[in-house]
Image 1 (cartoon, rainbow, N blue to C red):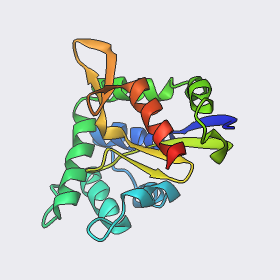
Image 2 (image 1 turned 180 degrees about the horizontal axis):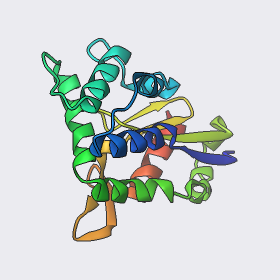
Image 3 (image 1 turned 120 degrees about the horizontal axis):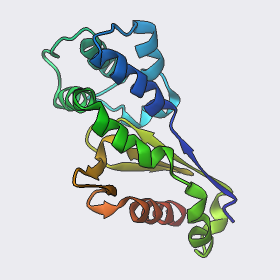
Image 4 (image 1 turned 180 degrees about the vertical axis):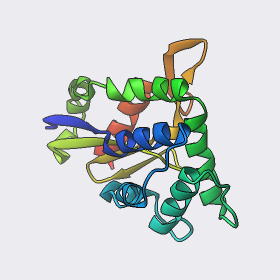
Length: 180
């Protein structure tokens, strides 16, 4: 039986400061950038084409107000996504609001009705600043690409991921996690 579902916002909280400071023209130090790319959960973004150094290079170029030159397709996407957050911090905060106010325990009843609910006692939902993939599942972790959270500009209470209602999406992926 799943006893708890927690939400991990460490990386997004760190990036919120980064986006805010960078948008205001402040130089964010390399040690801070390095601390972001070294978060253990950032490993879900890293592959043969995009690694810790790629993420550092992208964030450093943003902080230095530079275009990224000779970047891979993934680095360019990552640069674009982070720049998008800085361009409109009001919209960024609208994207952050549902994840900060997510009461993940509300999914417990539905999850525990599943015959596989005894697989994990604790589940963690992690929001990451991703590039291409919408989500990842790794054992008891559901990793969701923060950049895929979409807020309807005409109805800020309408939040979706992949065209699916925010809560429904998370519930669907949590069920997938325990059935995997």
